[in-house]
Amino acid sequence: MLMSTPLPFVRDLAIEYGVADTVSPLIRRVVAKNPSAFTFKGTGTYIVGRGTVAVIDPGPLLDEHVAALTRALAGETVSHILITHTHADHSPAAAPFKTATGAKTFGFGPHGSGRTRELEHDPGLGKGPFEEGGDRAFVPDLVMREGDTAEGPGWHLTAIETPGHTSNHLCFRLAEEDAVFTGDHIMGWSTTAIGPPDGDMAAYKHSLKRFLPGADAAAARFWPTHGPPVRDTGKLVQAYIAHRDEREALILRAIERGATTVPEIVARVYLGLDPRLVGAAGRSTLAHLIELIERGAVVAEEVPGAPARYRLAGR
Ligand SMILES: [Zn+2]
Image (tube, rainbow, N blue to C red; front, side, top):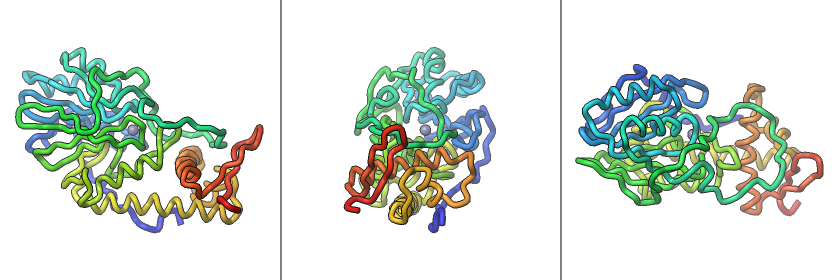
């Protein structure tokens, strides 16, 4: 019941930590040793170009990872440090790496800077780990918006605004290889965590649809921050959209059958859930509920001193 459509995950990734691996003519990758439930085998920092290069997501604050990146780029010039989003496994090492290289940092803006709403009610969530925390220290030297391009000899990286996982998420298109660096927006090994207040399900779905076959951001290859590259890109995006639609249908059915709070909905939608993941499931459910409320399908009732209650609109 949890998911009826199997997602086409790709999880085979042979890596050696701290070593620059040439993964395409223009791309090298160095994986940081921060494996976890959220980062898979660790943060993959990408190096684009030769001689004068861009570095995408220097990663977590791990001295050995910054040292590995610096070592890998000895004799080369780093012209751009690009940041997909401000989670603790992506942007914090930008500061020491900038000090080491003198390069400027580029990104959408500080953590939360793309947010369009705040939570209006106590959703009654359980506790538990959900995703890597926000990096509130990072501020880009230069702001990038949709269509802005960083370029060097033989490469162009163009920003694609992809809010949803975080409000400030950017993907970067490498035109020369019909490839997109997808950060945490599209990951091959797992679905993406959408946690309010900074995560936004409606924005996420919109950002996802841009990568469908024939849509404006479609590409032959995705390079996610965590896990191996995605080759069957259209199929994966279609499966992710179907997965979110199925989850939404389950939430609506749970409410129709009498669940009124986030914990009650989670208990019906996520059968046999590991208790440690109840908080994460609650936040993901809340992300769906907020979208359903804004679409007019669900109504939230404020209950003083208690979590919000939800019902189908018109009931
Ligand atoms: Zn993230």
